[in-house]
Image (cartoon, rainbow, N blue to C red; front, side, top):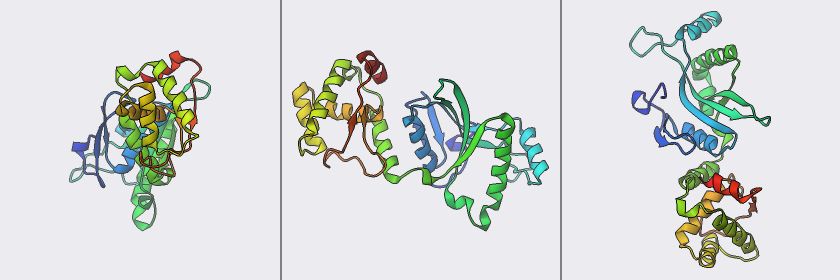
Length: 256
């Protein structure tokens, strides 16, 4: 349960309540930038758990840090009650060794960190940084410079196809799709033309071929550059690499 929910606080820009595709619950995101970061975390194979609006408790700990560095501690608006500070994202990340690591990430627009008006923001961020340092947790700030607009647009499209209906979970069907797509490289087709021909070859509706295409990109079995151009079905088939799993059982498990 996030400490802050969309209905609890005003936010800059648009806030979002989004059903998760990696964590099966509703995510509460207080800005477009937080939504963008959620998309990146869901797309990452290394991120295994996502907790947003995570409280820094007990509040006495953050108060003590603020006193130690001479920072005025924030209070709830129009009250004298000390605010419960939060971190935007607390993630569980799988390491190359197979171990798991907790990391804290604060999401800020770059302009909020610059100029004379940024001083108060930076003060509170320093309290947050020291809190996580005392917990032995890696903490850093993420800004919009991490993303490109095309990356976020593409991830927003692809996550709609992150979960396939049971009829498309056949490992045989998916391998046949990848084979047909690989063979299509030799032809100057648009993406939609390619998918229609694959649908005919596999005796499935065009919509199912499209769903498979986007799902396999989301799962990285079709690898393309998502950062520099938007995905359009009427555009030429993008450059891609097909990555076959080590066995068909793994392919079927990924789709579920």
